Image 1: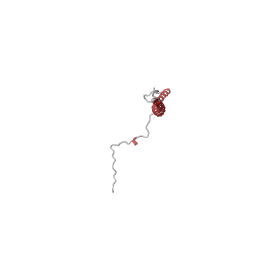
Image 2: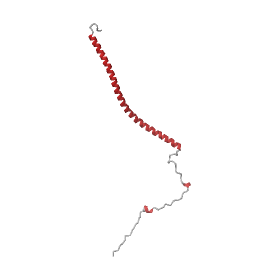
Image 3: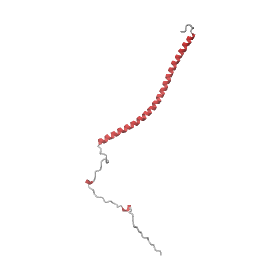
Image 4: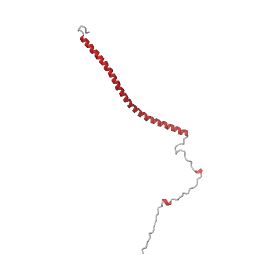
Length: 131
């Protein structure tokens, strides 16, 4: 004797369910070809370019990129060349210094030996022969 009472469903404001309220097919109205607007060939505000103009623009871009790459390479090349030359110049300077020093040392030695020999010769000479 139990009586089952089902509650009454009251929905005063029902929110739409997007999944159920969308129709399977959307009606399409035919449009004549004359009414279809032409599709722009280029983005809005950009003029359409001829193949020659595109080629020229591509060449100009290539030249600009080549110039930028060469500018960067010039800087790197100059720096590396400066370091490499600095090492070479340092080694050559040291070698040249050693060579010049040996020659000067030989000349100084010869000059000193000659001067000492002259002085000794004058000291050994009789007192009246000194001039």
